[in-house]
Length: 109
Image 1 (cartoon, rainbow, N blue to C red):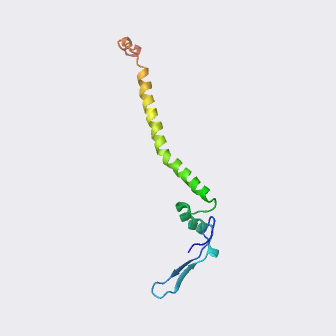
Image 2: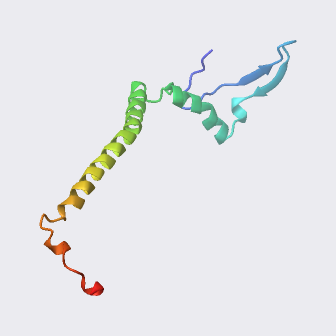
Image 3: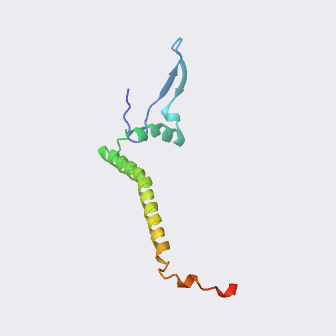
């Protein structure tokens, strides 16, 4: 059975004994505090059942998931590009003339 709702499921939860069918516990919506309301709607956020924006909410969820999934890929590409640049920069300061290597530094003389 589905209850109509927008962001928070406005439903009562009843726990019945499997042996005799007696009511063991009743979680009524009127007794929910703010945490209970958020906890109840958490499932709907993860499954995309929030109907506040209709199809717009599913599009927003899709774009957010796509951005989150692209972060490791773009991070790797940035790291790989910096790695290539650092190798090129380290090699560019070495001159082809090795005459400067033959001189003894002043502090060793």
